[in-house]
Image 1 (cartoon, helix red, strand yellow):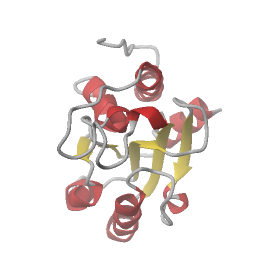
Image 2 (tube, helix red, strand yellow; image 1 turned 120 degrees about the vertical axis):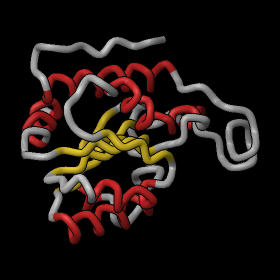
Image 3 (cartoon, rainbow, N blue to C red; image 1 turned 45 degrees about the vertical axis):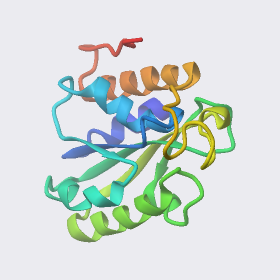
Image 4 (spheres, rainbow, N blue to C red; image 1 turned 30 degrees about the vertical axis):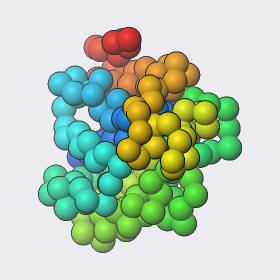
Amino acid sequence: MMRDRLSRLLSRGRVVIVGVGNRERGDDGFGPEVLDRLEGRVNGPLVNAGPWPESFAHRVAGYHPDVVLFVDAAELGEQPGRLALRRAEELAGGGVSCHAGGLGVMTSYLAMATGATCYALLAQRSRADHPPPGEAGSAFTAVVPMSATMRRAVDEVCQMILDALSPGRASCVSRA
């Protein structure tokens, strides 16, 4: 079902895929990791927005997209690695994506500036791999690796995107 929805979504004209997250914070690096794996394998712009997606709004708008797909870790209240595809309006109030405030601002801007429809492909992060501020992996501390569960989610999302953009022609194999 999600695979079909994503395929229909990515066939709606010009698509920009935006990876959101901080690779030094474990599972929060989900979006940038997906973009790393897609680099050179899809036709169309990929924007690694790191943990500050609103800082890249003008760049994304410059591509004149019909669809913007944000890829991010989230707090979905689900099992770690579980995926969800949500419309941007569902993120505007915050509380879902780890970067919902920035995504809400950015999606509103993109809708007004370009008429683009914005979606977020979200993966439930592992609470253990996303430490609160002041603990290991938070600001000014050691880097925390991504969980094995989230790496499998990266594989799954990459394959879904590759299948949607170039059916039957590519595979997304984990580098680790």
